[in-house]
Image 1 (cartoon, rainbow, N blue to C red):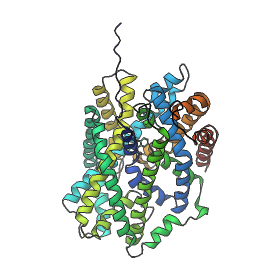
Image 2: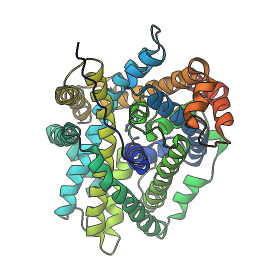
Image 3: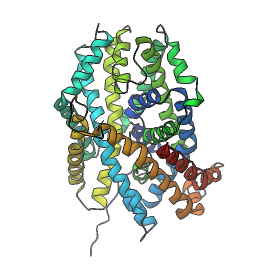
Image 4: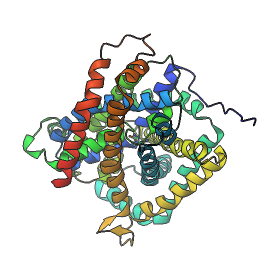
Length: 450
Ligand code: TRP
């Protein structure tokens, strides 16, 4: 019975896990989804709730996932099987896998657009166009359903290629340099945006809260966006946590990732809203808010051609490090639990995503048959995964750590068996055990009742 002990891949250094986790967190969620949600939920009031979610729930939930992953050394389903054998807890992991397919499916649609926009940037196709034309062309692009599907397929293939080759670490090395560059570019764009005529209105929208706008829908959207942006609630950080060395500091990892992710989202807001108000793009414009405002902004800049091109290349890479993390969850599950070879697991996960994703892409054409209750399948996948499955997953994860895993093991894991001092560990545990479950449940239920 020569059972071969499989050696699991691991992250080489501390910056390895931070880069990988930040790579997962920073993506279209920050630059595309965050402004959309802010715009659709009344601006500053949403932002305020979002920041509270990120600080008070984001950090503890992230820590919980990392703890589960590192302690179990297993994928998101296997982790619960190991830590709570013969219970129903692995359902949390299965839910995460399902959620991973859903998110990857619609996320890859938008990821594909970044490739289309790279081509548009190279060919300088935005130059000199006014808003109406840019808007028209964006709609026309959606109507070319199969072109969307093609870019989506290319993007899924790219993600699969990276995971298949097992060169994530290599990508993360680049990401370590490129994501700070994204930050720099966003700062430059922000400065340009805020100095446009009429930009101040955008800042007011973003920063001056109207508390009467905080409704159940705003609460649940902020909760969903917080989980989405930080990649929480579906096992990405359980899976990544399982690759982390026993000597790494999980608390500082969680802090760094949350800080970096939130900074990028805030900057994206500072780029989009002043410009959108200046150009007359409505905050409720959804996808167009970002994909139409940005080309307009580049048109107003010296060197706009290069800014546009570099920006969309960076955005595509940011999206890629996020899709890698989504695929990694699926592959870790399929290969470790269903014992598929890693290569086959990658192929199966990519084909499954491609199948689901095709519906997401084609559901944005005018006159599409792929709607449910009048809403595009795309929106539905987004809503169900981000606003339902992720919060429920996060809720179950904190309940698991607080009530099943227990205080002592949590302390041991967070302090690396007592070798690290962590003044905050008690507070975190209190939040994880009582505050977070209560807060998530209240927000979630208030959103459902609405
Ligand atoms: N957080 C990523 C973003 O903001 C998207 C993402 C990657 C994600 N992995 C995830 C979202 C897991 C939820 C769960 O773009």
